[in-house]
Every structure is written in C-alpha cells, then in structure tokens.
Image (cartoon, rainbow, N blue to C red; front, side, top):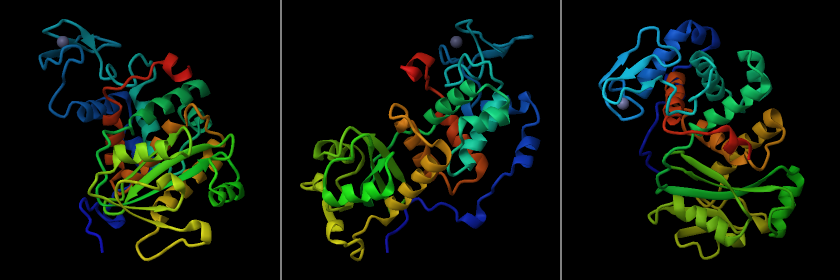
Length: 313
Ligand SMILES: [Zn+2]
C-alpha cells in the first residue's frame, strides 16, 4: 500500500458549514471584512502599496478605510486582490466563495445572480475572479501518479471511440490533461492545444517529479515518457492490471463532466482552463473544514488581478 504523506482528516472529522450557520457567522459587512483581513494579513495589516506595517484606520474612510503612515497611500482589504475596484460588498464575495467551495458541481452565474442579488454579468465576473483563487503554486507530484486525458464538449460515446481509434481529440472538443497523485490525492489538470506527445508530455514534465511512478493508458502520446512508467492497454479492452490503472483520475473526470453537463452546460474554450482549475482546486481541499476551504480560496485571491479586459478578450 502507498503511504499517505499529507494525510487529511477523515470525512467524519471535517466540519461542514450549512447556509444558516454561514449567515450567522457573517451577519454583516464588518464581520466579512474582519474575516477576510485575518486570512489575508495573518500577521497584521500591511500596506499593499509599499508593504509597511505602519498603517492606521482612516476616520470615515470609505471605500479606503486605511492609510499608510509611510507612503501615505490609502487602501482597503480588497486592494491587491481580484476584488480590487469592485463595489460589491465583501460579504457577498464571502458568500460566493462559500457557494463555490461547497457545491461539488460548481455554481452557475444564474444561481449566484439570484442568491446574491447582483446582475448576472456581475455574478459571472465574480465567479471568474474567485476561480483565480484556486490557482496555486503547483509543486511537483512525486508519488504514484496517474495521468490521463479527456475530451470536454462531446458526447460520451464519441469520446470513447476517439480514444479507441487513437486519433487526436474529435474536432471541436477540447483536450484536457490531468494527473492525480495516489499518495496525496492531489489533482493537477489543464486544457492542452492537442492530444500530441509534445503537449501531453510537456505538461506532465512540468508537474511530475522524476521520482514518480507514472501510470497511463496506452495512447501514443505517452510513448517515451521519461519516467518509471506503465500503461494499460485500453485499446484491447484492458482497464486495470494490478496497480496499473487510471481509475483515480477518471473519477475526477466524471466530476468535471457532471459539472459541465449539470451546471455550466457549455464552458467556452477561452475560459475552460479556469473551470478545470476550479474543479481541481475544490477536489484538492475537499477534506478540509468548510471555513478552511473558504480561507484557502480567499488567500489564493490575494496578489492576483483579473482586469475585465483580460477576462473578455
Ligand atoms: Zn505604504
């Protein structure tokens, strides 16, 4: 059996938060801001302009409640995060983080629009910005790693045929490559240009350590993979040979597809990467208490910007 290096607490010990409890925890803007500030500045407030800790609250200071005594700039807890320049209250952002962390199939912008009472366009932008929070410094997978690829946007039946016929992705469908470390359960996934050896192995090389043991199917894009490597011969109907299988990453694909079919219906190719990151991010923290999942996401939103222009172009 593999040893678990970062054993997360079991499901029975994780603390979930229901919606009633959430609204009790965040009854107003002040509690939401306080929580976000604590997550963002665990060692006390810092000026986002110059990094100084020498800052003071500004009397009546809205929307910038703090002033830096060193560089004299004003700031808020949103500055230097994906929430910068947003007029949406932090409380609504926190509720959106909760909904996106706890709904395993994702949350549609229509649902956010209704629950948060913001326009659907605003809801869509908030969700795209929150997704940035799941992008992490990815670190290398170094245990027993399953690699696999899937097609998003096509019918299940066609996907299967295309796998068997060893062609590239069926036209119009996006290819997503993913890997799962069986020891830590961590998933890393992203769309690639095509199901080619260069694209697939390039992505694996960036994320899997040379120490890893890698399992794949027998698609030719894996031939010559410079790792200790075994494949199962899907093309002749072989799916599991002792440890050589890709069932773990395939169950992640199943969740991603349930989200695609049930929540997002259509993920535009332009934004697909962000949705895939969301599903992987949620998967990677699923054993955490709800509040820690939200804090993980909130921390990830710091130091990132997603200007509207970049989002729509
Ligand atoms: Zn400053």
